[in-house]
Length: 142
Figure 1 (cartoon, helix red, strand yellow):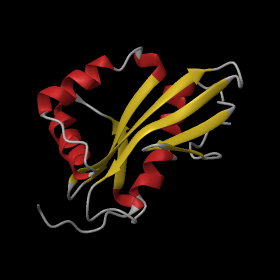
Figure 2: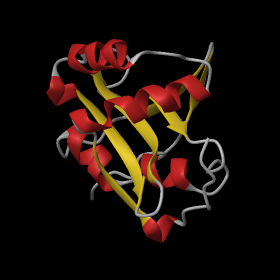
Figure 3: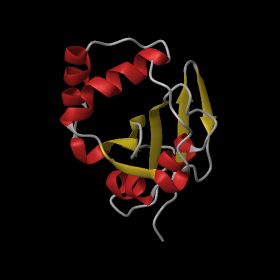
């Protein structure tokens, strides 16, 4: 594993994932115990549909490249109008607790991509077998 310096929030670029990121997304998933080959991850990324209801974003540092990813989806529900849900969030070993995950999940691009300028009534973050309400984890456009 290459040595990484902490990337500050100001050094991070948050952007939509590209096909060229597939290998790194798979590597990062493996760091949290969710191993996947590049082929498996490519198929998973292709299977996330409809694209208008999902976004996969990466946090990229100029020095270290992609250091994290976020998958968020938008769901219309009966109990609340709409919910934006963080389905997966991974930050590279050596970058955790430095703010990359919070920066990635709070970007307006995430909300705009998923909600199409419609505020979710609820935000939800799933971690393993538990669900946690995350008020305003995704900064919604005004």
